[in-house]
Amino acid sequence: MKFDVLTLFPEMFEQLNMSIIGRAREKKLIEVNLVNIRDFSKDKHKKVDDTPYGGGAGMVMRPDVVYEAYKSINKENAKVIYMSPQGKKLNQKKVEELAKQEHIIILCGHYEGIDQRVIDKIVDEEISIGDYVLTGGELPAMVLIDAVSRYSDGVIAKESREEESFANNMLEYPQYTRPEIFEGVKVPEVLLSGHHKNIDKWREEEALKITKRKRPDILNT
Ligand SMILES: C[S@@+](CC[C@H](N)C(=O)[O-])C[C@H]1O[C@@H](n2cnc3c(N)ncnc32)[C@H](O)[C@@H]1O
Image (tube, rainbow, N blue to C red; front, side, top):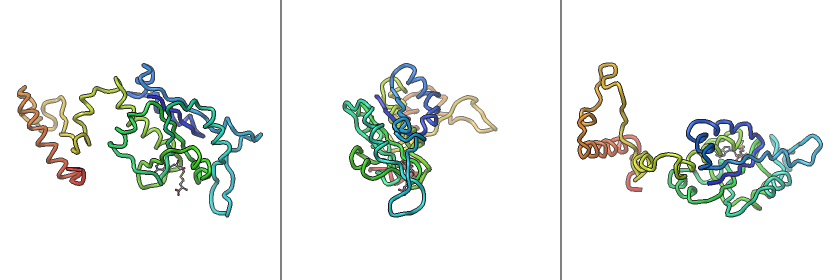
């Protein structure tokens, strides 16, 4: 899976050098290429934004600079996603769908956003990470890259994905590890039994209970 990210703040993506995603990049299981939109400004001060036509607060990213940055990318088999609070809300189903793509180009806005003309010209889909407004699309882009990368072969064990929350319209059962007794509370006996059939049954029942209690809305969706 390959991601090209169009951003004004590539340094924010340092996070993607760490932990599971960092290792996946090192092993070339996924590729994340950061394109600094500012490098494509023809202005001598490298300006990338301007005041909005019609007046109003804040600055708008210029369409010509964003378009030049976009044109620099090899777009073979790519889907272009604009991270936007106005987009379709990201959920696990959408993540699974995006994981089938070979190549995703992610456009990150900043300030008041991006001139609509370049959005209309290059974007295939707008995706939001929730009904709130952030200062930029960089954190949402990292959320999307992290969630989608987990579906690339070798990044995490396939079994982890199959049992975790949102798989089969359920939340995951509770997890326990050592010590066997913590602050006087013992690990559920069945998990120490070594009886796999009983463990599976207990986990299924717990997952159902938890889903009914915390997220009844996802059951049977
Ligand atoms: C301050 S926001 C612009 C909001 C825009 N003026 C509006 O009201 O719809 C700046 C940038 O942050 C990103 N952004 C903010 N909230 C987001 C969210 N919930 N999901 C995805 N991207 C978001 C987008 O890329 C957006 O262009």
